[in-house]
Image 1 (cartoon, each protein chain N blue to C red):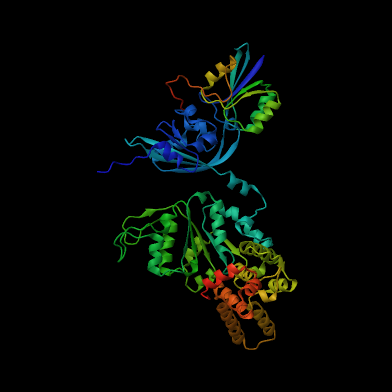
Image 2 (cartoon, each protein chain N blue to C red; image 1 turned 45 degrees about the vertical axis):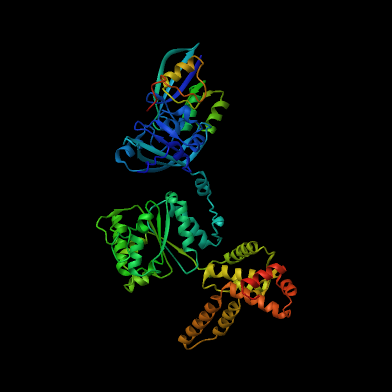
Length: 463
Length: 118
């Protein structure tokens, strides 16, 4: 028989990436890792055998070890936020997590983790939120309203419903709400409710037990279980099948569920953020979405404005994406020509930020000059604008207008559907054709070295 | 004559200056307590309030647990001698402070075999 592996406490504690210590059943310090020594300012050999709270000195209502007692009695972990004052007289904000542990002989003790949350607190302290580092850029009043709501939404466990057209940044906002919340240390799990068929989605969300259906060869925990103590982000909630909406509602109400094929209910503590690009109220009216679930999710509602309503933001975003892609490509493009800038400012961006990012990426790849001009933009932008000019004339037959827009959309999708690889391959072919197969001249024209051209030709099987 | 203040919590020096509600105060001279020491219970913990009390009561010496830099500097500026970071029973801290043997950041074990607990 293989000898049982029992890790050494000190080594185990060193593996925890936060200040951590182990207390015995009278809350005396048994062991602490180097991070805890550094945070409190006390080396282990000086404080071994001392009550943990005398050394940590938190303000979490644990001055007489009340939290320690509670965890020892209930055998359930406890996580509270607060601060400590260390021996260097520094007040450090922490997330104080106390978990029950047992020695090999069954004697109970506690694992105490004090995560330094200074970075998180510093960010939330600033009154003017700057989410630019999160690639969330916006100076328009509508976006500022959204930014102002983020801290409020982060400091509650209420469900959040994020609505907005495709490409407006719903996922990003959900992630930021989670990251700013007390649940940040726990998982953020995203699931697309519109991408999976009913049975699969149910099994993904709630898990299944072994043998629940053909192919269920093992127990699967499901997203709800995986997101325990964290946040579950249900994107495209408007596309969730009706039968599953009932089950979701019951989980939200009872905070417990039964996995597919299981008998025992599982309790979870999960915060729900849902998002959709569909008009949910309208769907409720059409009986495509349960009204009770709608109200359950719509506790806090944030609507992300489409790009065309974010006056002033387009210019900032264009600059941001241009800088991002020129840096990534190692180019020295400095901006847009005035005509192009005007075209880009006038363009309605039905695909919002995602579309803008793609347009700028395309232009940055194509452009070989210092400034992006008209020929570097995807042609569909101008087609759309031209068609809009044509459509400005009174159109008696409304369905025809719709049809023409649909055609343009289809065409646009067709064009954008072309991968960058195909575009680049075509660029190589065109350059080679133009210079009669002369690689040096073609490479020169493309702004590449001969080696790069050779690599690209090999990549696209042009050799 | 000097005047000593110790924020306490039960038998211990309060782990934090800003969270203490029990305050021990005593006059002392030549290592001996003069007169009757008194214990004040504050209505609520307040670091600002405690600093104000120290100034108003003309305290010359403070023995405490964890204290923020800001308040430590304020008290030092007010010519108060502060021995902070003390862990242990307040009676022993008092004895050592009176005899001038208490050091900053000292951990006071009642006896070497008896570990501290709250």
